[in-house]
Length: 98
Image (cartoon, rainbow, N blue to C red):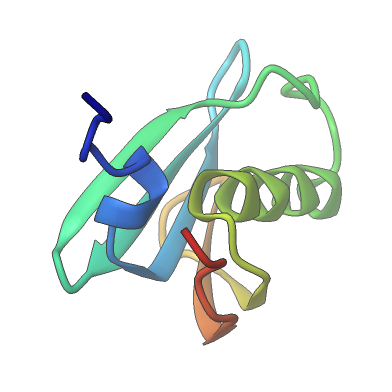
């Protein structure tokens, strides 16, 4: 009997915000979703914590695209927290066919 279970990326919502912040040993991220709402978070393996924010933002953006299987356009701004940045997803491409 064939499984009716959907791939995980078909069950997560549309990404709205990416949060990126530097810790002593690595860059960490959170991706916020809507419809259905939720959050995915973790640490980036690359780049190292001493890397420039632009490099970490590109890595976080790539992680979000890999997670959602969608092309995303993100507008980054510095957060009010030290060593933190927030990205607003301005455009999310369509979900790929099942």
